[in-house]
Image (cartoon, rainbow, N blue to C red; front, top):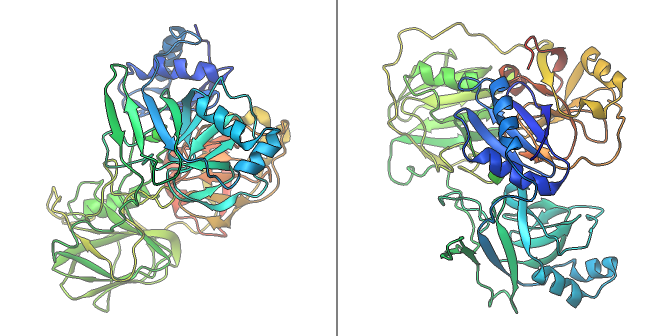
Length: 535
C-alpha cells in the first residue's frame, strides 16, 4: 500500500511523490489502468508521477481523490513485468576507457557488467524516446561529464548516475558514452512511438561491430516477438501535399523563424514528447474562426516578422497575434480580418512593432507532415515539419467547416506592450526556497531576457535564494512551470519545454496567462500576482 504525498503543480496538475524509485512503477501502474476521463497525462519520473487533468472534464480536487485512492491499492514492489526489449550494442563509446578507469575497473569488466545486468525503464524524458534505465545488478554511480557535448549522435549509449540510456536522436548531452545501438528508439509513425516505455525490461546484446549489430527484439509476456526498425534519419518535409498539388503557398523569406503550428499533441508526455503547438493559442484559434476553419487547423507561427510568401492559387488568408504592417500584393491590409489572396500575389509581414508572434492561417488549413496526430513543429524533438525555409511549398487542406463570417468574432487589438501581470498558482518545490524568495518573486518587476524561445523564457532580476542545495531528482513538468536553476533566476517553461526536469519549480503560470507570455519580447517587464482561485 502506497501513501504518496501530493504536491501542487499549478491549477491543472499535481505530483504524487513517493520515497524511492522502486515505488514509482507500481504507483504509475495503479494510476494507468483504468483512469477516469479527464486525466490527460501520467508522467512517471525518479520519485514522482505527474498527473495532469483537463478541468473541463474532471475537477482537480476529484482527480486528487481518485489518485490517492488508486495509490492505496498499489503495493511496493508490485507491478507487472513489462515486455522485454533486447538491444544490440557495440561497446565502442568514446568514454568507455576513461569511465572504466574512473570506476576502478577494466573496460572489459565494465562491458561485461553492463551487458549482464537486467535493466528496466524507470521513466522517460529529456527527449522523445529517451528512457532512464535502472538495474539492481548495477553498482556504479557515474558522474556526468564536466562539460556536456554539444552533439551526441543518435544511438549513443551512455551512463550517468545510476542510470544507463540511449540517445534517440542527435542532441546535446553530458552522459558518458560507452557504446552504440542501431535500434530506432523513437518512431512517431509507429502505433507505439517509443521503443522503451516505463516498466519495460531491457537487455543489451554485445555485437562485434556495427555491421554485425541488428536493431532490437521486443518480446511480450506471451512470448511473441517483433523487430524494431533500424536507426534511420527521420523525414523532415515541410508539406506532404506540396509535391502533389499546386494549391499551396511558396515561401520567399521565412523571417527570423517561421514554423507550422496547430494546438499541439496531447497524451504523449510519458514518452518524452512535449505538447508543442501555437504559443499564443487564442491568436491561432481566432485566425481559424475568421476563415471558417476548425480552431485547431494548422497555421504558420511567425516570430518577430519578416515572412514573405506567394500564393500558388486563389486563397483566403487571415493574420492575427503580433502587430506589424501586413501587405498583400503591395497593398496594406488589416490584421484580424479575412482577405482574398490571389494566385501570384505576395503576402508580406513586416517586422512587428507590438508582440512577438503572429499567426498566418488560410481557409482549409495548411498541410504538413503529421506526427502523433499533430502538425505542430517541435524543433527540440525534431517532430512535425521542419522550420520553414525559402523555396518551401506548403500544401493547403480542405478542412473548412463553416462559411467565412461576415464580421470578426470579437474585439481585437495590438498585444500589450506595457508591464504584464501574470497569475501564479502554487508549485511543488516552494519549500526548497528561503521565505524571502517568495516575497522577492512577487515584489520584483522581472524582465524577459534575450534567452527566450519556444522552449522557455528566462527572466532577468534578483536571485531567488534556496534553503536546499544540490540537484532535484527529475520530475514531470508542465508549460508555465517556473523553474529556478542554480543561478536563482527563473525560467518560464513553454510549449516545447522538456516533459521532465531537475530544477525546482517554485510556482506555475496559469494556463490563461500563457498566451500573454507568447507575445512577450526581450525587454518586456513582468510582474507576478497570486492566482485568484485556489487549487
